[in-house]
Image 1 (cartoon, rainbow, N blue to C red):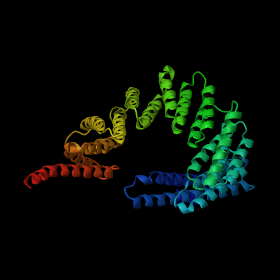
Image 2: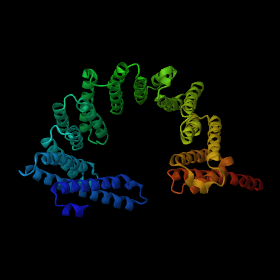
Image 3: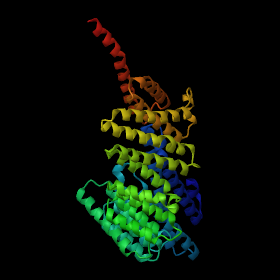
Image 4: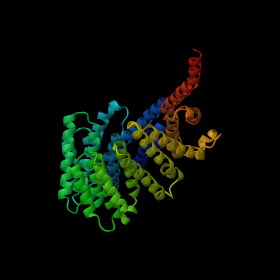
Length: 483
């Protein structure tokens, strides 16, 4: 392609070929960057990242060279009006793509400031030449994002003000400030400067306050629901509740899923504030509502009930109430099994085996913390039996060599099950020590570099120590009798 670009005598065809070459470089570079993490070693990952960055830069330089050639031809008096229009369209695309690719580069990290400055310069050049261009709305949004990353909030807002000025009736303009607020929520998570973080959080609140209280018909129920979710992340509980209430009020009768999403959002906000009882009441009411319980997000409600009920159970001192909380968690997991009846088996397994095991493990830990050792032992036995049933079904004896046949999700489930099963056996004492060691050996065979390897090895050490003490006890008794 490069040779064709150099050899082609027709300038317009040569310029188009150069554009295709640049596009090929940037696509290859992006693919290399996106798939680098799949390599087996850190060295291979880094080598592919370097190659992807180099190829992307190569594409950028081609876009820049192409844009200059197209600009020269546009300025040439001998260029026909038709060709000049075609050159202009091609130059517009090249300027945008060069700027966009600078903004996508993230390695090496020390070069980030330079990449962002070049991206901003490129987008500013684009909107200067094509303020109402085909890609101008996206360019203003990208400018705002880049300025946010560069810690220049004034220019970030300024880019969106220009967007609203040039395209006042566009959806992008109407939703630009909430989009900025979302970017600021993400940006605030990385800030360590307390004063700076406080200022950003205040700006987020100001943007969403204007949206929620003065937005009128510019925003949909889904927009308000998303605003509420972002405000929960920003820990602005009161404003989040306003956003969720607005979403519920704005949702039309055929927007059940959006209203349901907002109701769950309110429950999640209460949970985040540790108002567990209120959150549970809201979710129980949600699941009792025939329309809401049939919505796609009902599964989210069930999962949240499990999570909240576990927290309630851990803090409850009264035995009857504690059992009710854990019972509610098990009931929610059972409902999930119904919702997921047509989902892949690995997902059904989570509701059938793994989530109930989590509930029983949490219950046992709470019982231990309260000095209820016998109850805790019985509960751990139930959890272990549940996980053993799952593992025997999914990984029959002697089937360790068939590990490769499992999907990634199935493998993750099986590994997680072992990581819970083996510590349970270890905690059950000498009677289960040999089974814990056997299961641990099976785990290490299946997952030699597994995520839970350290957890499993600690449990195996605990089981070995427990078995050793049990073996030593009779000998000590015999020695004592001979004294």
